[in-house]
Image (cartoon, rainbow, N blue to C red; front, side, top):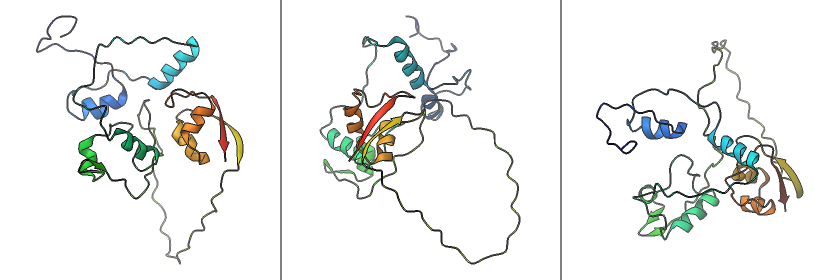
Length: 214
């Protein structure tokens, strides 16, 4: 249905979606074959953040004009799976939700019980809702041939532990609390609590965060 009328077989529509929904959802599943008509130069989350900063406070209203179906949002193992993400045992699901079938296939859920992975995963991955167009690069020149030499063992610099105390961190574009927390070896929940952040997924560029390192 479109505007209260059934769609015609040859009717053409223009969809407005975010870039990862276009790439990993529509394009990857061959739901659309056309190319993009236009791409915003900014990220959706930055536009939302700018709007909230400009308004000062907002009062969203829920229209309930859509719903998620085919998933069990109150699964009894949900809390344990979330705890594994927070403990860096599972990757943060940025572009794909964690689902029971994938976790069972990976052996993390077996016979209705959660089996935590032994190793930590790298959660510091680049992710963005903004444009993903590759930047132009200079052509790579072939390297001059060199004579083989004795291998030199690289010297790794010593890891410097963050100094204890309170620091002020200024949020940069692309930052998120878990990434910032890992930089200082603290829990992102503590950063949110100390800075009165109700939504840990919503921080703004140039926002000043007080981080307590113990």
